[in-house]
Each structure stands twice: as structure tokens, then as C-alpha cells.
Length: 321
Image (cartoon, rainbow, N blue to C red; front, top):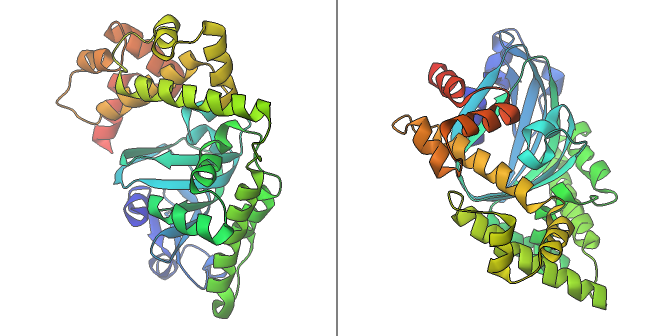
């Protein structure tokens, strides 16, 4: 998955890059794979290291001089990381325009689009695991698997976890010797998961019980939204589904997601529409309807506000790439 993406993003493995006269030997790590951006497209490096066949640590610092985009088919994964400089706007619709730096992912798999604008520095240090690996990390830390997973999912909309940015930054700035590199990265991953586990609050008060109720309510709403994007998703409809008042539902959604239900719906509909644009056999008017927009014009307006281009232009750009 990573190699496919890197090839599409005009990066070259370190051995080939150095042979062709670009890249820096001092940035090539003793373990894992280091790749350098082709100087015709930009500058910077990308590194990843596969551990235990289910955990990957990643560090990148790149700047493109022209717009670059890659579309790859991914497997399900969990991940979290520190995203700096211009990176947050590329991570999720919820983070666009915010100062969010710690971001968690729970990805179901499928087509994934990486879009990079010119002259914006993108830097990150992150950890990605196969979904089944969460059980091993939870056991190692003697914590609840569901709570650890939830801590990852909520990083994007929470205040983060104290100490986690520094721990993740170690993946970026430390270049351990080959003899200790594997031990270092295993210890660093455990450290990051331990900080996440420590950030999970102990739920033993009436207020905690309310938060549990909020979470169950919002999970029900989100599940319904994700399965019915083309249907009526008015606030009243959602309230009727979970049998709560409008004020209660919006409050619960803000507590859990950090945003309103309608903001979540807009983000999910746009992402659904953007994925459907990959299938050129589908008309844009059909995609608009499937994504829950009343007509193609409404979809186009919303798409342009979110992504800076029209669905038609976006599809043409994918075809060229």
C-alpha cells in the first residue's frame, strides 16, 4: 500500500535516488525504507518501517512544486499521528481550516485519495496498525481494547493526550543505529499507545454515565447517517430515530464528535461523492443524488467550497494523472 502510494506521488527509493544524484545519504535510515521526492516535482523525504507484520511507523517532510494526487485502494487500518505545518487540512474534512495537529484514523478500507497543493510543506510522524493488532497492544498495556480504539478515533476532535506530540516527534527526529533501531521503534510505539491509554478517563461518576449515554446515542446516529446518505437527514429525522430532543442530540454530538450533526453529514456526503467520482461510468448528476444533494448544482457548489474545484474538473484531473 505504501509503496504503491509513494510511486504515484513521484517519490523514488533511496538507492535509486542517490544513484540518480538527488536525495541525501544522511537522511537514509538504518531500517525501513526511505524515499525521496523526484526534484522535478518537489523536495523532501518519506520513510516507513514495518514491524511485526501489522504495525508501520512513518515519518515524512515533503513540499511539492506542483499539484500532485494519488488514488490507491487500501486495506482497513487504525492509525494516529502528529501532523504539522500545512498537513492538517489534508487529513480529514473535520480538520480542514483548524489548528488540529493530533489526528486519529479508523479507516474501513477502499479507495483513498491523497491530494497535495503546490508550495505547502507537509510534515508528519505517525503509527498505523492493522485493526486486529489493537488487541495485542491493549493486552500489553492491560487496558480495555475498545477504550484504546476509541482514544485513537477521538484524537481528531479531542484536546489530545499530554506527552503524545513529543513521543511521536521522536519518530521524526531520532535516527537510531541499526543495532538498536528495531528495539527503539518497538519501545516508541508502546510509549505512544501507553500515553493514549493513560488519556482514557476513568468512568466512575454520574457525569461519566451521561457521556457513555451520549456516545451510544451518537454511534447510533452516525451509523444511520453513513448508511443513508441519500435520504432525508434533517435534525428532526435524526431525533426521531434515537428518540431524543434536538437539544440533547446536538449536545451529545458535540460532546463526542466535537461538531454538529449537520457538519458531520456534509463532510460524509462530500467524501462519499468524491469517492464515487472515481467511477467514470457514473454521471455527476447521479452521484449528486446518491450523495444526498437535491441536484447537481447544489453538489457542485458544496464540492467547490470544500475542495476548491468542481466535480467535473476534479474528475478530469484524475483522468490526466
